[in-house]
Length: 209
Image (cartoon, rainbow, N blue to C red; front, side):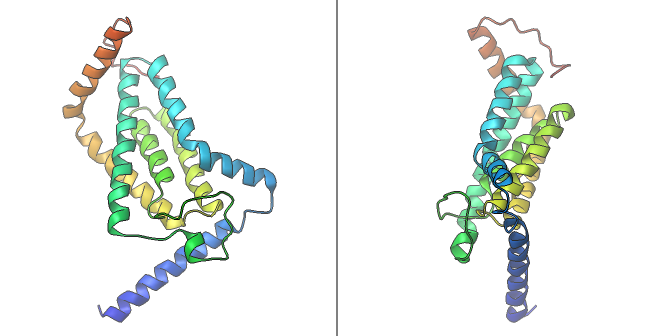
């Protein structure tokens, strides 16, 4: 493939990405209620996930605690992968490249690709989903809304969110395959926590909330 064809292909992908961005972002500014909802999710989705994980930890069984640790770990690893990707490939934010984009929130002019918020949301959601479908499905829905909201408010392209989903899925899969090596470490953490706070460990790894 010639260099010119590669350039044209890259321009075509960027053009498609921007068109998709416009189709979503242009929905903003017409309804104060919808804009406020999207701003809430774009700003506080990760806080909601943190509260969910705390609830799973404090209210759940030992297996639930293990699930919460896996979700937290998966989210952290996925965000580290994001940092590495952003150092290798830098994509400016939509409002930097296109000066006619009016964002609904203030945001730093840092790397756009991939979306950290979407990556963290999907990583946590996927990690829970593969271990507890009942809790995981609502988390996936929240992650989808979060990713959509990042485009709605004008701080990310759709492909940033797609990349986040891919990163989150790959990290989740790898960690899932490493469970037999990681389980003893996480169980030791849970046992230590239970000993510190006087909660007897029932060894209940068969059921989780």
